[in-house]
Length: 345
Image 1 (cartoon, rainbow, N blue to C red):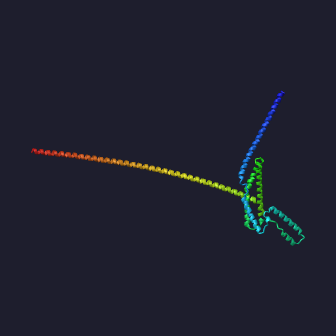
Image 2 (cartoon, rainbow, N blue to C red):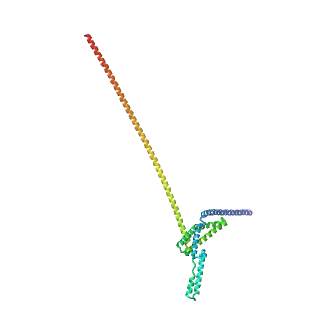
Image 3 (cartoon, rainbow, N blue to C red):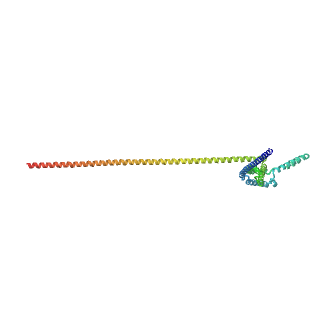
């Protein structure tokens, strides 16, 4: 009995182990299936994003070149007027702020040191200290400032589709890279695109701040609003085009229906005319037949009348002949009677 119980327990343990192995294998297969489905979804999403963002993720070279050319021309113009120096062309806002901070510190130290000096010397020293300003703000011509601002707005507006495509594809790219579905070089390439975009947006903000104070804080927000307005206008234009196409299709259908109705009416009229013609021809034939019948009856009547007249004439001739014969007979008898009388005498 003990051996039988030991064998049964051993078989039970083996069955439990086998069931656990089967369950683990099923779980692993399920996880692999989920990963496969996730990878397929990620690949499909990445394909959609790559197809939609391949063209829009490129840098707007045309707008960048136009702005840089206008910027260089205006700087050369100020340089000829001796209002700027050559090293001021590419000074950033941060460097100008640092210079401004250093100027403010030097002015405060000068004020403390000039407390023992005379008022004339302090005024002359303070007048020599000037706060640095970007050269873009030194442009006096309103048209030049307007042109520079407009070109910068165009440059920023052209970067909005690039920013939208890269920001929308960042999560998908990261998930692909995390699951091992995106190679290292492509991921590094995408990171480089993000870095270039961030540099471009920072440059736009710095240029806007250099042209006009506090404009760098609002330029990107304003440009996004303009982009949304442009997209809504495009959608409205598409809707209007679709409505116009639908109206044109409806008009064409109405015209076709009208043409079909006109053709049907013409066919009906032709059929009616043909029927009328057939009816007129039949009536004409009937009239002709009636006329022919009448003519035949009249001809027959005339023939009958002629025959009757001929018969009458014949009868009259016969009567006349009879009468003539009778008259001849009477005359002969008279002559004979006279002759007999003469003989008797």
